[in-house]
Amino acid sequence: MSELQLSAGPIEYEDTGGDGPVLVLLHGLTIDSSVWREVVPGLRADYRCITPTWPLGAHRKPLRPDADLSLKGLALLVGEFLERLDLRDVTLVLNDWGGGQILLSEGRADRVGRLVLAAVEAFDNYPPGIPGRAIGLACRVPGGLRLLLNLLRFKAFRRGPASWGWMSKRPVPTEVMDGWFRPATTSAEIRRDLVKYVTSVPPKDVLLDWAERTRSFERPVLVVWAKEDKLMPREHGRRLAELFPAGQLVEVDDSYTLIPEDQPREFVRFIREFVPAAHVPRKSG
Image (cartoon, rainbow, N blue to C red):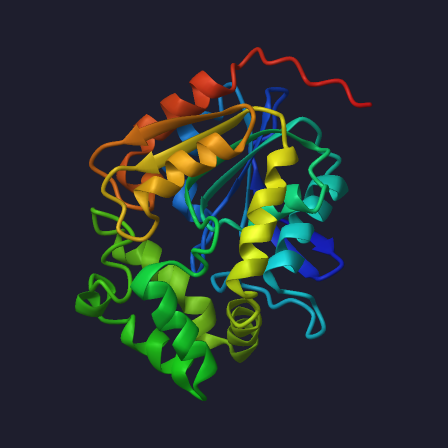
């Protein structure tokens, strides 16, 4: 595990290295980079895979108390991360969390050559579904988040529709989920970071305006959607693919939102077809 000091604080990440096309893979709320543990092995031989643990509640090191951890702030932090590592012609891969799209609407995606949106928050669906509303409420009630996190210690609650039951069709291994929830359960500073993000989501008209502005991104976009997703409306996959001038849609069977958990082999296949291993980096300027 490597660490990079950004303006907001420390970001931990893993980097397979290599000279292949660069993939930066980002996860969702209260998840860490281990969500890609079944995907990276199928790619690392031909691609450089970078998997940061983004400060969305499962990060182990708190960020600066004055850090901008709003939806837009974290999106711009993605751009800073790419810049600090001097990454170019990156394929940015998002699953669950859709905030990275705002990098496009802000005109800060010059280092992004391709984009993969896999069952992500989109349009005005922030945070998504019953679990999103539950964590939103918990973050606004004194002591609510800590209570919710303590309930997540119990397997029956984890698989309920109000928590993680609708995130993946197959239960995530207990030790993996324990690692996801431990930081916010045990650290008040991590909970502070999470609350700052969750309570920052702007009104729907602002979200829709940001979505409309992503039309300016003319490079290839792959939208990967789970047909049975209960949190990300199926129509959003089609709308996203139509939004981008170079967008395309593929749909996945037998999966919920966490496609890297439910269908990792299919996900690897989609990436390999979308980003050829012999891909020549796009010239800057």
